[in-house]
Image 1 (tube, protein in one colour):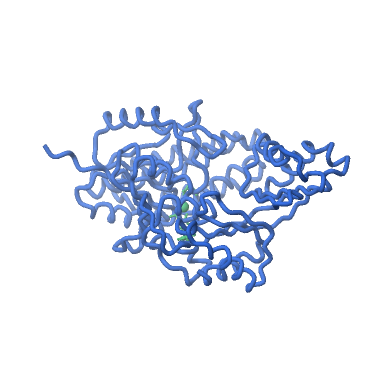
Image 2: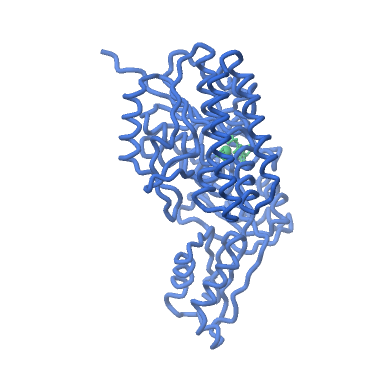
Length: 461
Ligand code: ADP
Ligand code: ASP
Ligand code: MG
């Protein structure tokens, strides 16, 4: 007997789900893949997550603007429902009205409390995916194509850990299998971004996390491929919005994609690769607005040419520099610096230490730098008082730029070329780090220089 055809996972981002016209386009792309079993994971309509977060914050701040913002959001979804479902919209419209009435209750409670609780924010910010996925599933039905709607909060179990949100695989798999037994089908439309934590509370996978949902549901459905559909043809050598000369990368390895994503290539969320690596599922990045294009393929295959595949950069960072002659030759100083930051729950983006040991420098998020400074101040109070550490210096408005490629390891000229380009562009490098894998070299620079640096470095490779 032939084994049944495997599932393919498809994830559509906010730009692909922006309005009724685009949601209908998504359904058409999927329906054209005739006979393919599909697990389809979708983001909220573009801008809705931002709007929901703003709603929760303004309600908690007791600013009355939340009522208008809520009615705009309701209007936007009702309009899409009517356009997508026509004469069959009634039940979905009623459902949406109940959803918005519930949301109004939550916001009202936040306004009474006068503070946005973590739990309320987690619940509210994930609602956009609940609505958009329901609209797509209903639209399939109206088209005459069967589809089962799956609210990921009924399936996906996660816990927040230091390195990000981790999936509880045994429990999620058991829930997914049960769901499929109860709702047999060959096309599932799943809410991206949302999940439940160990206590059963609604939570999310972090901003831009629907890509990760796509790979997770691909793994749960034992999919043969994961397709991430967005608004560009694939992964480019740099963000095409910032570097118009950027070129498409047809093939890249999981590790290259992880590094590019970690250093700011927004086209894919850095955690997306983990479930795919585990099961060796290839990921394709594809364009909803150019569906004939094959896109970029991300897989375990490594190609060492060209040595540098891409450049990415991200900002909103700050440098913390712990300096002092009293640190020279004193073992354990770096450990104490990073220990203090870890205990404070501050994630360190990049580390660099001069070989003189005269200073330890690390890059953290700018929003956390004041807290980080206080933690280090406490940890090194004695050394600071005795002058063994001269100061803890902060530099704000920092970006990190990284060049990434599996082939860099065997290629000694890469660093020279990078610094040559930065030098020619008169870009001041404040700190340097190289991943032990030699798959990336990253530099900290002023955010004011970042756009120029990205183009200069891109031109050099
Ligand atoms: P979606 O709504 O589909 O999740 P995103 O806006 O999150 O889409 O990601 C797509 C965007 O990522 C592109 O429009 C592009 O500007 C940006 N981007 C950043 N770096 C890269 C890169 N290296 N290759 C392609 N796109 C990139
Ligand atoms: N809607 C969520 C966000 O804007 C998740 C996603 O789109 O990936 O962050
Ligand atoms: Mg995205």
